[in-house]
Structure formats: structure tokens, C-alpha cells
Length: 207
Ligand SMILES: [Fe+2]
Image (cartoon, rainbow, N blue to C red; front, side, top):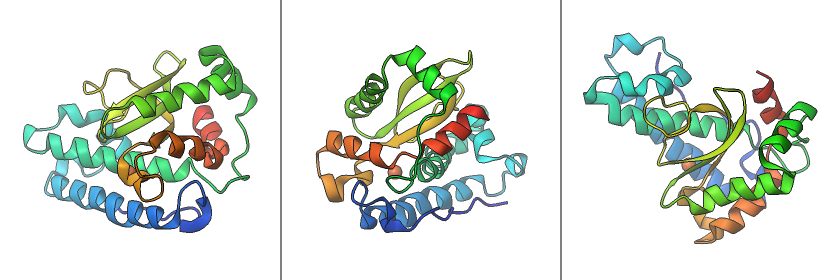
């Protein structure tokens, strides 16, 4: 079953002014669509993976044949990462707050909430070139902040330094912010906090 481009759970302009409508449009209908199309192309005729979910594909990328491994890493990662990204954002004022258990885990791992936000943003600002900054639940249950290059993500066994389940991720590729913020990645990350969907992050933490 080929993968498909997901719809946004809100209108393209709903994240203004943090994320502008034109960026949302190009980001999903051009960039994310290309990842979906190229993932489907890479997996075409690979019946062994026909029933795999996108999560299973990310976890198992390193075990795939060399002929498709690189394309699946880039495009399967791109599909998973962007699908998560649309879900962990929502219009300003509607995202709620970290649940009591998540707030306690954040406090235990990073200290005050502002310190947590600063660390996640710092991981994004310091990511050289393109990539992602993540809040993850590690395999031992604790939380960590990590960053991955390109379209890698913390599910990719054998390919990334720190493994875990992504709870929150922020895209720091230039295509995510350049139209509005140009080179000011830190400003984008500051404004992005206004549109974080904590209700969705809480759901992922509880899952
Ligand atoms: Fe992106």
C-alpha cells in the first residue's frame, strides 16, 4: 500500500504569525509530497516491506538492501518526520500545556520549563545545515533532547546516536522558515513555541 500525503489538521494559515501560510503550503504540498513520492518509488516492488508502517520502516531502515537503504532513510524519514510535525503544531492558544506526568518528567530531566525550551531550541540552532531537534522518550523511559541531521530521526536503529520515541520534533531545515525568517533560525524557533500542540505531545507521552 503506497504511502499518502496526510492532510493538515488545521488550515494552512492557522499557525500565523509563527509559521506563515505560504511556508505551510510549500512545505507540505511540495517538500513533504516529494518525500512520500520518492519513498513509494524506492519501495516499489519490495514486497517484503508492503505491510510495514512508516514507524517500522524507520526502525528497520538499516536492515534494508543497500540498493534502497539511502532513499528509504531520506524519504521514509522525511515522511515520518513531517507527518509528526504537522500533528505537534496547532493554532496559538489551543495547544494546552504539558500534562502533570509529562511536566514532572520534563522537570526531572531538564529543570525548569524555560530551561527545557532553551535546550530544545539550542539543539536546533546548533544543528549544522539541515535537520531536526527532538524531545524523545528513551528506551529506558527517561526523556532526552536530541538532534538529527537531514531526515534522520530517533527511531532509526543503527543510524543515529540516541534512540527513542519522538514526542515533539521541530524542523530546522531552511525550507521550514526561510520565507519569513530568512537566516534567523533562532527567531523561528522562539515563535514556534506559540504553536506547539501540547495535547498531542501529552498523548504521545502517554501512549
Ligand atoms: Fe521540512
